Length: 160
Image (cartoon, rainbow, N blue to C red; front, side, top):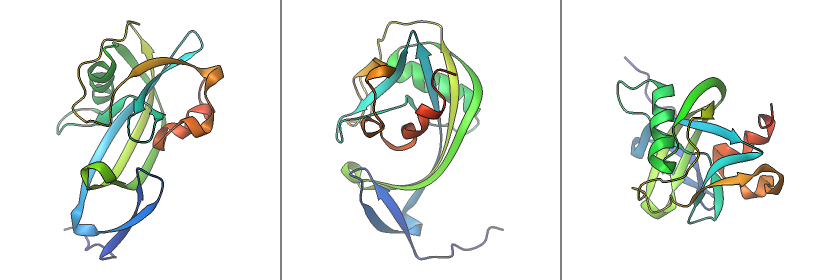
């Protein structure tokens, strides 16, 4: 049996960079897998349409799906790029409030290094209106302020 939550509300980071208290019973539990994909001095990123910042391709893990398989599937869905998922890079646990959809998430995010097997971007239409515009972005042009959420740590791992 799991212990009861210690707080009736949880402070969540919002998409717009603020904080919001949310009742803990309204949180959606979401394990997610993301991929850091590099090629020729570029990194594969997707633009968040609401905040105009880049994030790693990735997303929710289906029940019964392995993390690496979820990362592979999500990269293909969001960008059309096939990847071989490699080493685990980092983990982030967060409480996140997604303003446009009025959804609060307890996120367990796992980031893996991945090697591209294909290079032409051809992602399907996004399921979420925040998603869109996947691109190979030159690392030399990226600044930390250009990145959103879990993606802000990529500078610790690129070029390695």
